[in-house]
Image 1 (cartoon, rainbow, N blue to C red):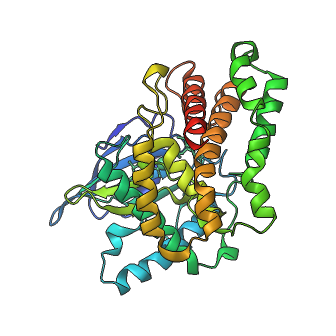
Image 2 (cartoon, rainbow, N blue to C red; image 1 turned 120 degrees about the vertical axis):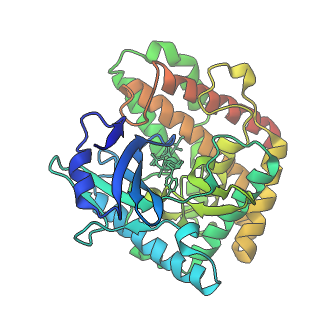
Length: 363
Ligand code: ADP
Ligand code: GN1
Ligand code: MG
């Protein structure tokens, strides 16, 4: 009998049948702190090798409308990285995600309810941080994210599908928020007037990076686009970055997006959803630590203008994320997973406070 935790209403049994787990599956347990997909750890017992772990994920198809395209991107990028890892004598099963195939050789499984599932090898002896414990960890994550972009410099960007259109188009995010406020389907606008006004005052800022891109002053690169600290695994012994995960949003983008999103989440003194705002501050010292690591990891590919755009990346990714949380709050919390009423509003407020502090710092 398989022990299944946190998978009510999902076709776990059917999905388990679709894969060869190389042993008897004993446990399927909800896992991790992602806001988007449903993630489970699957443990199978192999008579010779002992327990084997896998990551099983149900892809959120209301967000990723064409899951097959998400998988094509991931397989393409991880195959590309795997070759590089092998060339330099690394361990490809640890240093990039390995998509585990179904019994039919597919890179994901579509169940009878139309839900899409995928399996990755579980990367063992690694830690996934929800906040920076030691500055060195942030430095290492920065080096890895910088290096990730550097390595993907040779990846054929035109081969990538745009898995979420306008993902980091900040002016579009602004417009979406204003539309949500106008519709006010949940009747929540009155309680967020202050937050909306804060955003309205920054309408012009939203255009800063997209304009530089339009003017050809910043190059498009292959970027990860969701570079928060819990989307990288660090080696539990050495604390070095080993594997960048959550590759659903790999798309052409700006270096400032990747840099900025890491700062938004990691260079803060409190969690993204901390309800007590007095605990939430932007930490300039962690910012500098990350900057140093990122520049080191990216090597010499970044142009002067790109380097100059990085502080704007931090401000705008934080503002954009605040706008996205607020939009979701106004629309009834259908995008980001929540675990309490007002969760997205708490998240909004931390982001806006960080924006304000960043503005003072980058003046
Ligand atoms: P989401 O898109 O919902 O954020 P992620 O792909 O980031 O989903 O996965 C959620 C969490 O699962 C990660 O933060 C990490 O803790 C864990 N995780 C994901 N893939 C692996 C893996 N291959 N090995 C070990 N842990 C993983
Ligand atoms: C989501 O999937 P996850 O939890 O790593 C979101 C990011 C946000 C982040 C905020 C596909 O990231 O864009 O910045 O939450 N991912 C998607 O924590 O929307
Ligand atoms: Mg994630």
